[in-house]
Image (cartoon, rainbow, N blue to C red; front, side, top):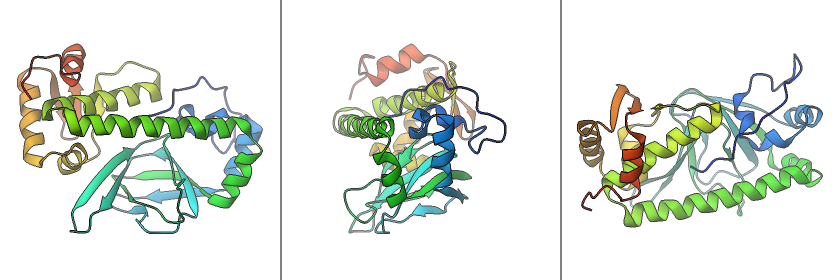
Length: 248
């Protein structure tokens, strides 16, 4: 769930096609000047999804790339025995669709009402080739994805259930703060408890048990069914880093 650092952007002129898009602060297109941004937007369109609708399926031709602007997606892969492995979640500002193969290696499914800018892969490649700033952003994005994959290996291989959930909540909170440029204590959970469990390599029952434990310790509270409030960030961070003294 790594994300690019938010940028301070100039005001767009009235009528600009990207006017009002908060995702631009952290998206790959944020490096473009207004004129180039308008040209970039013109080579693509917009995908509108409702909960449960796929942006693409595993095995579909990787003929388009996407930039999430609203909502959220879950990425998952089906195993040969029919089980599902969630590989991650995508939020506004996240870019996906670049693959080393001609087919998508996973399915991207909307967690709720979601929008994404979409661009034909060949036109996107042509656009980026003449714009070094975007090439550098793609390189940075690839580096962030590699770091996120390495962090996920540590998460699944070395951390306890409580540490995994604490890390997950802090990552979501950090992402929201980068998007808004403000400090927050609450974070939305558009994914189900089963989705969280699958992503963290836990059972749904374990996620529920750890949630109850974190609430009992006054580290978090449920602000709504799909929203948590972090009550003690320092203690939650200590737990995520294995410094709380909790047994594994």
